[in-house]
Image (cartoon, rainbow over all chains, first blue to last red; front, side, top):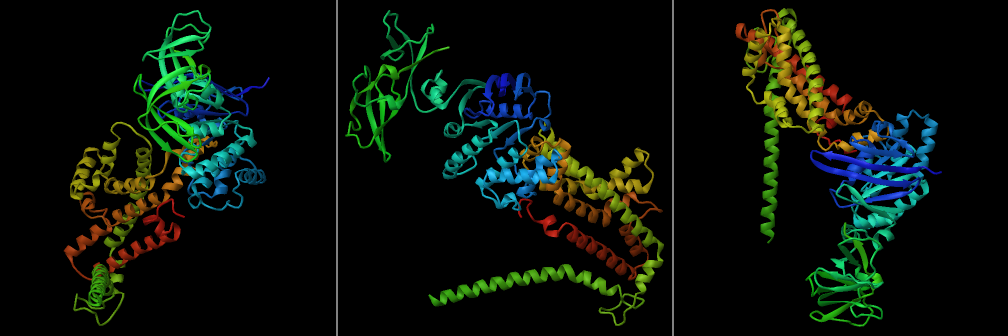
Length: 357
Length: 279
């Protein structure tokens, strides 16, 4: 049986009376890339520091490659860490930076040279050995930091907001590159980020964190299409969310009554709860109802924004006054203009119902 | 149009000339007195006569060499400066590391405390240290002097080290630790080298400060243990002659030698101005 690459069980950490990490649990397969995604202050960086050993764990378990590491000091954990600011040693050359971990392990010079060349080739920085970090671009510094972390052949790689210090264009390019590098090294990786594009673009699975807990974990698609809470629905992508309950009927297809008075046909989940939430993604909302869109929501068009390939039609719902931005292909015929009253159409299968817990 | 431009060019030129003049006057003002005392120290005349001297000799150096008060003073001053600098540099750098890398209640007050001797008149420090030393039953003048000199030099070593630690990110040390270095190893490999220029600059300032210190030392010396500046002041009062000029020249030479040595070993640019992230 394959041991999990990283396992967190009920990890808890307080700062004063603030519960920074409040019983987080997570299991990553060996070689898997997991993104820990959440808003700032959700405890994701603290979780990373707990795994690295820079914060003391209060209760719970952390296992890396099947071994409990909680008792080990940070310098014996064999975890590669790429810091948000890269933390390259400014007084050492690229080569010395990359070799630092291997020197601590007292590897012979020949072995160090071989491994250094290997990781620098991996991050495509051959020939940069003698440069100082200050002479490198942001993207190059980031790759040196990655090479330095990989040089110790870590059992686990931790990345703290790896792309946040780069400008938007470079970020895009490096995201693809980072993903390829991480794929090829087959090291279990935990990536901490608040940027969903970064999480989705690099990771195999996304763990969404909120208030010190991991609230949902799955592939990007699963998390997007089947959010299990209002927080996930609204944090990952856009969504229209209604709180409400199901009418007591015996029909197979339930009737969901939103608190603001809209009735939806939607499939009732196999749970018994008093309250439910209903989530609709904007791309499933049609300005002009199509066949099968048996759910209707009255709204007024406020603005139409032209974005090139797409138009964004902003509508205000009559029932609760909330606005929703609906994407429309710009080559579709003009459907509505500002001030028009429209009946938005949504198919019942596109209404994702979540039990309110 | 053309006239206006010419006037502007003239104005720029005049301002430039004025600045240059100011720099020249300042440099002369700093250098000339030392130059005069340097030349006077080689004066062959018995008395302090008109400048410049007509004949030169080494008689005042000879007189300096013959005067045990000066020689003992020189030895004491060097010993004292070396000891005070060593203690002050180690203690000051250690304090600066703790102040820079930790956050705790009262940290600001402690930092202020370390820097406070800078703001207290040295005469007050001298007198207080004398009182403290006798209360603590320290009657050895050299020990007393060392205590006083550590107190007056420590603000400089703390300040210089702190300045070099600004912008030193905590993540650097943590990166080293995550790569397998023990905290002590990480300190030696990362924090210490990055603070090196600040520590050296602090040590240099401490040495020079201790070496020519008068106000504190006046309280702490006794009849048997005198520093060179104290001996100089006493001698000037008792019988003024050009030995003082010779001693001044020796003094200046020692200071210059220290600066040159520092430039050779650490690079003066590094110590004084250059940011650690450059080059």
